[in-house]
Image 1 (cartoon, one colour):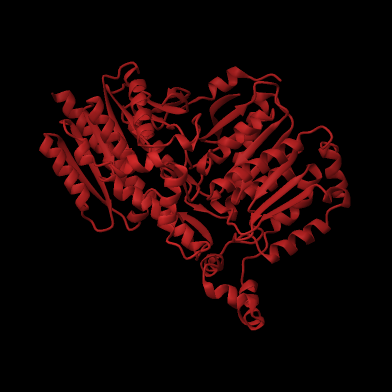
Image 2 (cartoon, each protein chain N blue to C red):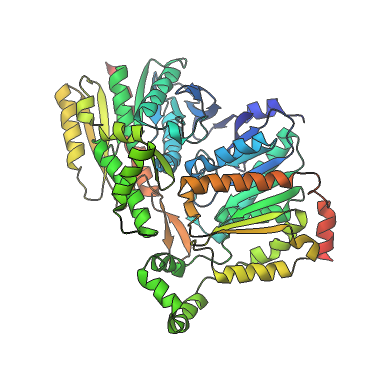
Amino acid sequence: MKEYPAFVPFHREHMAAVFTVPDEAPRGLVLLVTGTGAVRSHRFQMWTRTARRLADQGIASVRLDYVGMGDSTGKILDWNWSIVPQLLEESAAVLRTGMDVLGLDRVAVAGNCLGSLLALYVAAEVPECVGSVAILTPLYEVNALTDFRRRARQWKMASFIKSAPLGQRLLVRPVRRLEGRFNPGVGERFGLALAHGPMLFMYGDQDDSWSRRVRVRLGELLARVPSEYRKRFELEVIPDVLLSGFESLELQRHTIDRVVGFLSRCFDEEVIQLPAARSRARLDA
Amino acid sequence: MSINETALTKLRLFEDRDGGFSEEFLSPRIGGARTLAALTRPSGDASSIGWVVCHSFGLEQLHLTRLEAQLARALAGQGFPVLRYHGQGYGDSERGMEEICLSSHLADASDAVDIMAGIEGVERVGLIGIRFGAAVAAMVTERRGLPFMVLVDPPARGSQYIRDFLWMGVFAKMLGRFDGKDPSKSLLAELEAKGFADVKGFRLSRRAFDEISALDLTKELVRFRGAALIEAVTRAGKPGPSVSALAGHLRSLGADCSVEVLTDKYAVEFGQYHFHFLEATGAKRDIRLELDEAILRTTIDWCLAEARSEVRL
């Protein structure tokens, strides 16, 4: 395995990235993207470790610092959904550079939190993408209530209120109605991503981004996908944990194993069945 | 497969003409294994003083990366070569978290000093460290007999630093399922039993815990007589007792020690995750931009002043 650090030009800025390349001819290239505030190696070297495990499976990867983060140049003040297109452009620039310099035409993508939206968008919009992993995908907008829910979930009273029918009616349901709007970008791209290849969604059942409402919405999204693509979707909800932040050694191990195993299968010849262009045409039809 | 090695080699370096510097990724051996480093050099004439930036501990390393990169580029823009690196167990280094302890930080920094000393035109090396990196910078400066150090928000005593670090894990456990046991004791018991503890996902080894707990900069620094800048990051507008004690200690050794106070309302969060949710816009805002600017200004002014006084001497 070899690692090549790089500064990828992007308009007036330079994005820091590291390409990890197996010794043998790679089967493909994986783009690893992070959420708000993380650098390319991610917390606890999560993406560095993932990259090296992928190289053991004969897969190259690239991890990057967004503009204004880590070793990249530039500045960024606010993070919200409106910057996703900009981050997508940045990630696509690094991905294209990787495909060019490594001579590869099959890619996959993995990202968490805000990066999971990027993963979904790349999976939908990059024709060469054969698979994706989206960790803690925020199907609904984060707002002040999300922050409140995060704190309220820790209260002992919370489980009592949730279990009582009156509590459900007077508090839980009205609060849910005030939660953030559904991100239409997810709905638009979900089917397109699945048309390109398998897709894994991961959550911890204690995470803010996970709820029964999310499960229902994912079911609705899946129902709209042509039946032959549905089995490409995998959902893993890890019980009794907060996956956010990867804040346990065991969770880190599990996540890396799962991501590497899943993405490795995406590059298997028998999994890559439909040319991307054909799948997109079918969906459009 | 045809890897375009020429293109990859070219991508290791970029030049910022407006900023007056170039930056290159290196892949040196530091701390006994491969890692990634960034050497930032002035585009024009270079000072004979080269700076090495020692990073902090645990997740602070990650949260301070951008500030360290900006600092390196701003210093290079003023004529100083600067080296940054990932110590073993961090970022893109070859080894994992199990390697991390105070000794590993010191060995990494010392190797980085050797690299900087080998850069053409560099005659003296100074160290810069932020938070725990400041303690590392101070110890390596002392041990290697270096003439300059810049310590940003240094933890004078490791025992307090590691206690705060453990409490972060305790707090996380309390937010999760509280099983009625004292979580701080369970973390210490985990350290005893397994030789490491899982502190919010960070693998804290027994060795790291012991070494950092025993760290006391006023005892470690016994012969430094060079020039030091301590930047105290505070909410209160005055340096804390540990900074004052450290500065007093350095002066008692014969060092030329300056203290600059940087007041910031988020001072207690310095080194941690620095994006706060804004209800008005629904965005996460970086709360550290002003403080980072102040650190850049203060550090550069001092480094330039030291370089000028060197020239006069």
